[in-house]
Length: 111
Length: 117
Image (cartoon, each protein chain N blue to C red):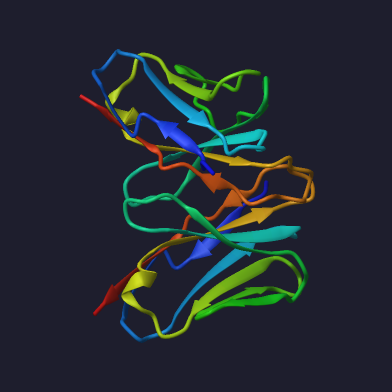
């Protein structure tokens, strides 16, 4: 079945360090979405990637979609305390009409 | 410009009672999704509905849980005879029309925090 694996489960970094979370799918994705959930909040859509090898940037956040469309990453440069939260990837498949969420990576930051 | 509206924000029930969670999607959105989240855990998909249709209920427990999205009014997630293990945050999300492989972003409500005494 379709499954999206996300690692690491937790990441604790010093403020100013970089952070990366990775998503992998066992089968080819048609698209991948990224969401952020602040502590006590609800998931908020960040971005969607559709094309093989696509790279998109939002300020200090860089999103990549693998050439084979089976993996994706989110990289945050020079983390700030406002980056704290859980980052979820969610994969879409050509045979399904709903997205499959990864288990999330919880980012905490030491000031 | 209302987003996804969920109510109540917090719901307390005693074991054996019924819990009804409501979700009004964003204007123009015809697809609704319900997720369950335990503290510090991920989002567990429960059910995906369109108006008057259940599209995918593969994440719904076989007993006590039901969902509907009527032609008029909000989507309802109903939990009968609640047990302590039902305590969780329940999020609703909505999106515009979806197609196979062409997924629109989901917009989430603030969630309902359900506590079972």
